[in-house]
Length: 220
Image 1: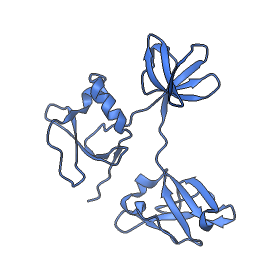
Image 2: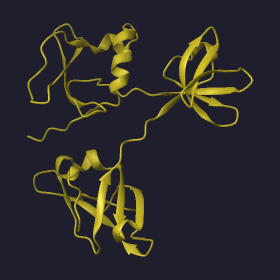
Image 3: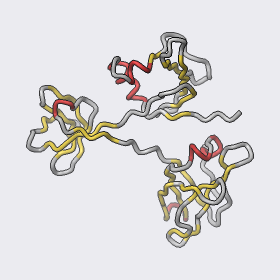
Image 4: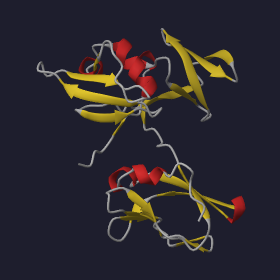
């Protein structure tokens, strides 16, 4: 079996990998499938369908003795790629609530990035050009739901940067980022509670660029 060079499964627990989507490539690229990993017998993960396009997949991973996932034996040479999580969206129907960064959905179903929204006037990006989307053509907008750290622990952002979240004696939740070499960045920490409560829109906008954040499980 041709293994993914990153061997992502060896850094992920059963809980972290369960429900994630993977791309399977077989027969020198002639067969490409995307599946959502589902729990199987014991602490294993794989496809809910045992037979796909004439190939038997079933179990892909099982939990190793160290708590991280191991690759299960397969009947054919396949490559496995971990796909990013699909973001979930909030639907915005009030034009006055629309803001830059949302996704406009037109009456014809097309989606456009919103460049600006002022006094009900929505400017969208259409093939690199700024166009005003008329009221008649606007249906609603989509806003990615933020997935931010909401309790103490270690977290990774959407670009795989490492963060530590902790609560001070004041009860405020703080966040700070780690450098690639493992040393913590010196300087101001982020009072994330205020951003989550809507009191710090600047910090919230910056954190939104790094979303989604996912918690790192630590096995001791």
